[in-house]
Every structure is written in structure tokens, then in C-alpha cells.
Length: 87
Image 1 (cartoon, rainbow, N blue to C red):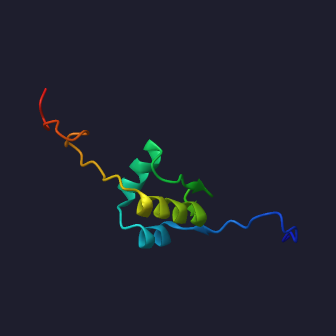
Image 2: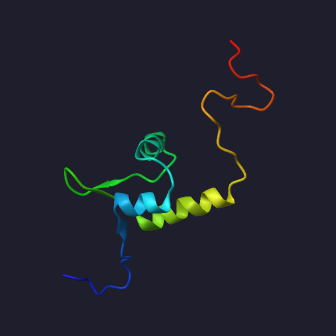
């Protein structure tokens, strides 16, 4: 049954294929970012199906567009001027 109550927002869910078409990252990269809290979490629909909230993904993309921060490469220094690989 569809609710006619206008106060409820309809959530649009997207599957993995649609997500990967929007976000040019690997499954593993997205999974790792989710675990670190850096990417919207998937919604488990069944034991074999997951989806993401389209509005959350679009918001994440907009935040990335607005961010002046650069991604830190693994193995590189977290702060400028700190040599990488020194102990």
C-alpha cells in the first residue's frame, strides 16, 4: 500500500551496478570507505542483495566536490613536510 501522507519522504535505493556507474571506485574501495565511515553505508535488503540511498550518495558526491582536502595516498605522509617511510 502506498501512503498518501506528504510528510513522508520517498527513498530511492540504487543497486551496486548503478552505484559503480556513479562512483568510479572498486567494490573493495567502497567497502573499505564504508567501514571507516567515509562513505554512506549500504542497506542490506536480503542475504544476497544490498542497496544504497541515492540521496546519501548524491550528498557524498557534493561534499567531495566542495572539499578542498586532497586524498592521502597510502604510505605517504599525513602532514606536509613529514618524510614518508621514516621511523
